[in-house]
Length: 207
Image: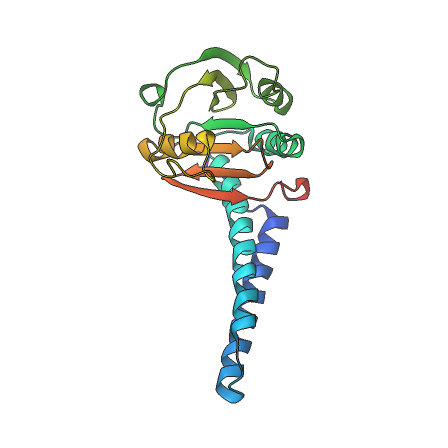
């Protein structure tokens, strides 16, 4: 599949502005310390919040960068996770990249259908018998559903890291797969890649 130029303009512009704002605040803080000697603890707390927002924007931007070389359906996937997030329907979506994944998961139910956001959403509807496992996306197809992923040892016993997140991390530790997670408790969306997990923005204006 052809490599795309990673330029999702609205989000990229917000990301640039976020970096510029942080740079301005850092320079202002340095100037304050040099000339006034005032306490900057409050400003550092504000900077921490800004860094967290920019990190989330960056994760959203790079998610689409990571997806676009491997599937033409990255906008359908973004639309799907937005809708699932709004409804607080839990989901686990595996995007196969270079590594073949059969040896890393317990195979579920073959689907073999063209990927659309409505079909992907319907699989994770709470009354659907397939909703509890992971969907495997291969190029532009929903290859299978109800797959079981290996659990990571990270976060074992911690309430803040549930089974879906540990599954996403587990597969990303063993392969180059990208794994999307929607929390049914909070509606928050994150993705795992290379053994790390990142929160992302789900605003439809940014996908």
